[in-house]
Image 1 (cartoon, one colour):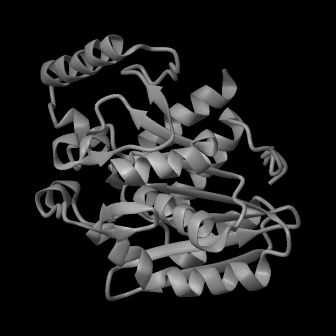
Image 2 (cartoon, rainbow, N blue to C red):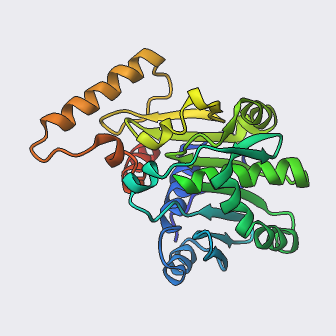
Length: 265
């Protein structure tokens, strides 16, 4: 694809890179053959998928001469069912306690992912991304690469990410990689609010926000975010076909739409 303008070597924040990583997180939901074909259009000649049928965990690595892109798929469950079944138990993770379900899911594919990266990376830049459950798995992957393998990673971009670990995990992660981690939240996205802080969970990375109109506003303060989210809720109530705004805002298609606007701005 001639317009693939990704900066593979930067370690700084980039709205252009965010757009392509968001597209990759969206592609992760496709069947593997379709995902391979889409990544080939970007000039990625290497493609390897990873899957555990036991945990329904799926991801892929795509590569070109300059970089590898590792993308994790989110859950295919109905979001309402996934939130209802949410298990907030802690287990030991990389430099802190993490969500048990997320750790089990990653461990089911971790060995294959690491073996591939160890054999095939060959000094190339590595970028990691994911949406929803996939965002949590992407974060844990970076934590394992950094803390267990001392492996360099260029950047982590996540979309609609649930809180993944406790305060110790978040503090240790941010001390090591927070400056290269960018966590996007679309207005009222409900998944970004679970598991709750009251259960001991904390977010990681630098926060990036889309307002109710789909515009990216990285300077909006805490209270303005609350007001903006309330506006989103009110508009949904007034809609002739109302739904749950927090679930609509979680959809990866809506993230990609906002990312495309931000890329052009």
